[in-house]
Length: 401
Image (tube, rainbow, N blue to C red; front, side):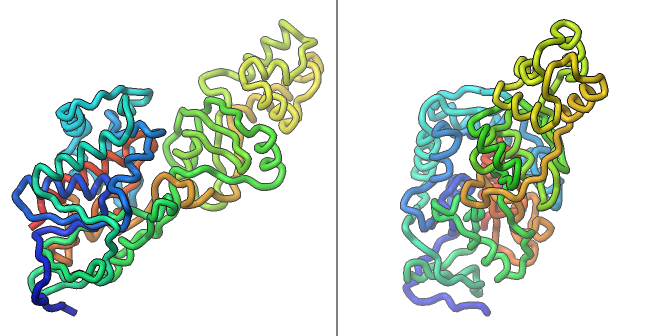
């Protein structure tokens, strides 16, 4: 149905639904091109995910960004946008506003000060090009019109040439996140790759849940993998299961019933270490020896669960080898994840085969765009999802009518 353009209807070149990272970036770029832009969000404040990110310091990008750091049914989709708007481009914007920043490990860039600086920077850029932002505003209806799109928001009729959906996914529902963007996509005939929680802690059950509860708060460096690349990062035991950067990373690749493979002594030869310690200190307890290389509480549990208790002198080379193999290839099958409540992002989303990778416009619905997390592009932990938001918002802002 093509709705009419009603008398008294407010009209804009571009209406963007979602005042997060992608939506604000798109608004800025469209405004720079002289477009009249309205940004709508049901939240009371813009950029809430930006504000809470990075422990309040906003991990705003990653200098190692590549399309290979993203998960999608179409792994090449992100290439175009990421090439056109790079981490260096966003750094220039940050430095233009004299925001101090620093690099942490693995190419992650953080603000020296509070993450609110990034939100304020984006809002200042919006003001400079005349972008209007309307908060506490919900879209009630939307449809194709004869010359664009007709919407109602908080009871007010609106019209636009280009409609941009930047509402993200359902991760962190306490902030009001929903799957509304998927509803819009389906209404206009676009497919949606089944969404699920990503960058999320694992839950355990049975014996390993009891063990995890014993070890809650213990962290150790690992190399972990699950049906994707391996991640050399820390793992943290919690009262519910496993968390920490390593587990969050592999959670994005995990499917129900799959095992996670964890190397508890990365970069070392566990068998060699145990054999040398047996020769040097044969009367030393196995758990005590393991405590030289692992957190002591974890060493005690590992020795008990993996069946290598007692003095090293009493353990055969075969037992030491089995122990070493278990340390380097600990297989554990999570019972699930903590879900959207604690997920940092959503995996899946609007099917990229139905979008232009250069503009983010729907191939069969001229003037309709999807950007940011609502799209089936999910980045690794460490600033990659923000870079996707900036890049996809940028290219859409360059293309809107």
